Amino acid sequence: MDWFADNLGTILLSAVLIVIVVLIIRKQIRDRLSGRTSCGCGCENCASRGLCHPERNTKKDTDA
Image (cartoon, rainbow, N blue to C red):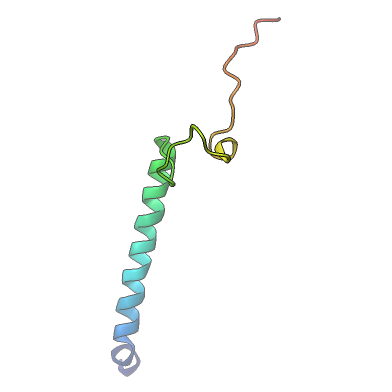
């Protein structure tokens, strides 16, 4: 029990940091699933648009 008492500050700080990191990751996943980007500057003139939003083939293949 002495070890726990001696390291209580480190344990609490680590727990708080882990919670913060988990919340950040959760928000980024939700933003990504809803189509939002992390940069917040828009994608119209971005040089890396192809990396964030790859072109999708929206035409259906009608040739049988």
